[in-house]
Length: 401
Image 1 (cartoon, rainbow, N blue to C red):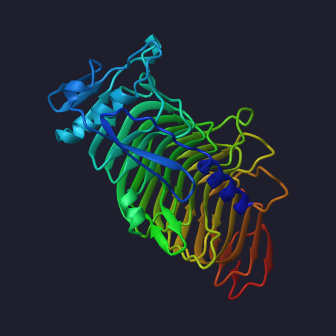
Image 2 (spheres, helix red, strand yellow; image 1 turned 45 degrees about the vertical axis):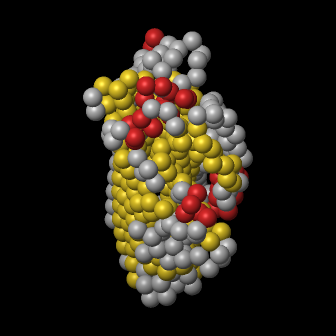
Image 3 (cartoon, helix red, strand yellow; image 1 turned 135 degrees about the horizontal axis):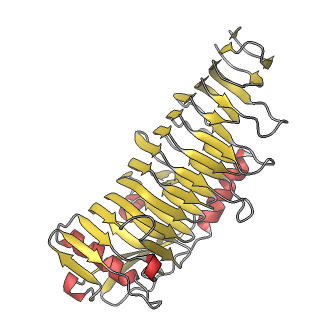
């Protein structure tokens, strides 16, 4: 199951080809990354006087208004960000009111590279950006960026990646992205994809924070791959939702081939398959991650689907799963320390164990409405769940009461 999820996610990302036609006033850098995506980076040569009447500089703020009447807003948005960067302005405000047909249409990624600032809409109900390409609406490179108060629709929402120069020299790159109060309706909401090939790694370092945002109908809400050691992942008070009649949903939050410190707290997952999934299926790979998954609500939109937390990663330092409302926890990994404490269980699929752990050091205690536990090949584990149906196989130094 885990390899199917990883393969399907990477295959879907690699199918998105970005073919951009830039104006003659811009330089273009094209390359293909390791998951097969053709990337194009634009560097505008114009100053803000040439952006057009929809872009205005108001003191320390660049303001962008939508063009309306089905006119594309791509160049105006890109010009506004380039203007802010060239003039050391830290705020780009995106106006408009979709209730009055004032929204933004984008036919290629808006690239933010090397800028510290914020792209701010009015709120999630007023500011709307519609992506018309198969690529992301925003592409973030080597920046310290906040994107807030808007709705984004398209095949992909927001993507982080390393600079091409770093990829060419097999060096890591750093970005910080804060997605705050953003509603994203797309197959892939927020993606953070570094580059890892045989003999050459260009991993992403830094931080991704997603707060009080909504992910609707996506195959993956937040997707992290090839993040380097020390990368901080925060997902707090978000709502992950998908209607199973509209799209085959896989996961809310996925992190693979990464070494992260993750805080997943206060989220609500209401969709078909996985709530949080961390995995690694590369040979000889040794991610070093630490996860805190607390106070989340995990629901299933269909009785035929799981509402589960999955851990498929070798040499994770620790996974703390506590005070959640959920249905299942699956762990298949060696040398992990996994704590499952004080959760409220609600079974979604009777043929699965509520808790199933292979090859880890586990602590399972003080959980409510827990019906079944399976431990296989664990080390120094502790189970304190009186009256719960439990199966033990090939465990060492097991303490059970």
